[in-house]
Length: 129
Image 1: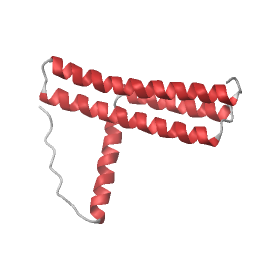
Image 2 (image 1 turned 45 degrees about the vertical axis):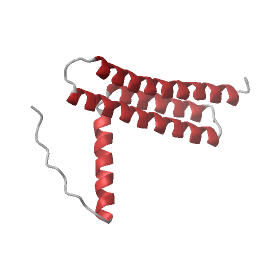
Image 3 (image 1 turned 180 degrees about the vertical axis):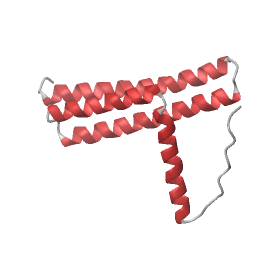
Image 4 (image 1 turned 135 degrees about the vertical axis):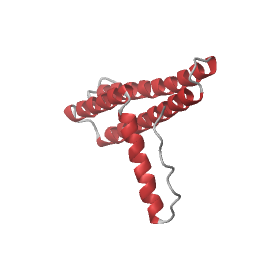
């Protein structure tokens, strides 16, 4: 059985903003428990470190940071899909498999985009293209 969680009261005004930040931080904490997210965080750190070493242009750092944040967003949505599917369909089902596979594919697309962009930045910085 899962532990019982109290349903939070609705809040308004500035309290709503603080509550929203609290929920977002709880989501980030939950996401950190995903091995894939930790690997993606490590890869993102390595990419940015390489950009520092090769003295890539600032615009490449900004674009890479945006791609990385989008990747984290997609990973969070993929994890949310997995959580919901596991909660409503504890037994194996083809629909559940499809939902999880599609979420995983979305993450793969973003990882490829990051890899392609990082490769482009390295090649461009060294004037190889």
